Picture 1 (cartoon, rainbow, N blue to C red):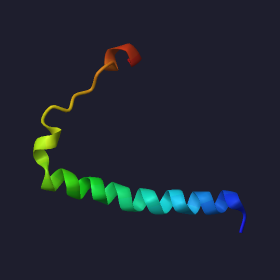
Picture 2 (cartoon, rainbow, N blue to C red; picture 1 turned 90 degrees about the vertical axis):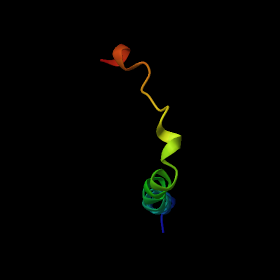
Picture 3 (tube, one colour; picture 1 turned 90 degrees about the horizontal axis):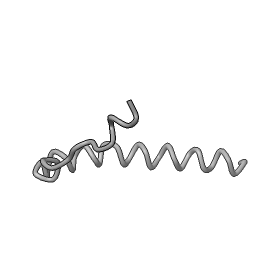
Length: 45
């Protein structure tokens, strides 16, 4: 298998594990998101 395909496969696996993991963690610990805010958005827009 070509190394590029192996890297893409691992990226897909890690993304597939990480995204639901972040969702579960945000449900378990909602107090960690209270102080979350976007900074520097006006510079981009």
